[in-house]
Length: 176
Image (cartoon, rainbow, N blue to C red; front, side):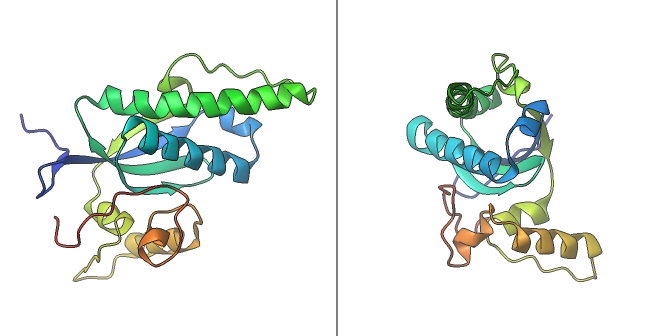
């Protein structure tokens, strides 16, 4: 059976994932949560050699377009290690200020996120700054583009001249 993760021209496998935040996200202010996630992704890129080709960090979930090296569990372990240390530091700081937050963070990536593979060619293209040409009117795609333009934590900012909060490996425009 053929695996559905995409093999790109340069020979690397890339996959789109949706990570839905579990209950921990209710304990952290929205903007600070997004910063924590962006910092954790950057740590994973720098320290763990994680390759991110596109991302979208939203209120209750994030979308990642990442390079798969080896098993998928290795990818999530890389991100979990970085996110877990950032989250522990946040909880420690809260504790030092007299605030106690009861959150379990010892169960691996599954204790923080519900992880799901996505198969959406349009989303892959848009997150990597490539054009999507549709021969018909697609209201869902127009809604997606509007969301991406309004979101401050998104890889398309990097491709349109802005400064991205997450380190992204740019994909060549002719890769499909």
